[in-house]
Image (cartoon, rainbow, N blue to C red; front, side):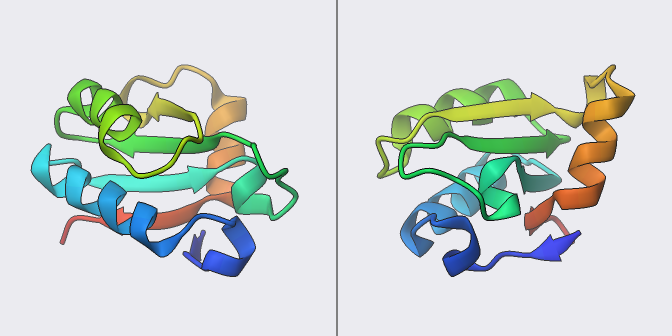
Length: 102
């Protein structure tokens, strides 16, 4: 997994900071960006795919849709209940860690 790079993802740093703030608010342990924005082959209106572990992930999912300063859509996956080994492999391979609780 990689570290966040704004140029690579096309996500404004303000939005990343808002995601991190919400992760802390809802006691989320880890937030990983994956999908086209992590690969760098996104379109202007591509959604933001996030994989989340721990905490109140459902509340986090709702909050990122409502409380971040972007019109982009979010697709949030709960890593703790992800049944797809294929999806887990994709997240492991291309994921960019946006936040990890220490």
